Image (cartoon, rainbow, N blue to C red; front, top):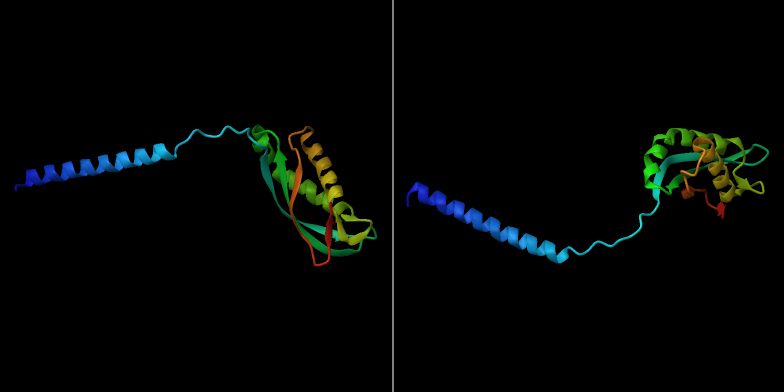
Length: 152
């Protein structure tokens, strides 16, 4: 066979291989493609960087520090970027609030006042935004020493 015939055969072989692969791909795709489920978009969650929270009693005695990881639930996905742009201000306000007064319940350093912390954080969010751009404040993780617990 001459050079031109070999090239034609190689070209035909490549075209047939591509056709077979294309058909098998489209057949597989049509089998797995189903009508997407229609679900209502849920709230968006924005992460706040992990912070250290001092655990001190009313007398001012520092007992230990706890790691606190907070997420902000944003009811409208359209507000996500405006909240993310203000994360440094939010984090600063949260750190100032956490250091301003005790984060314990009944002056017991082994019981962390979660509801009180959430309420104070919500007040700082209202100071920053002045509206309901942020829904719930979620305490995703709170690293405590052995024996300490969260009050829910």
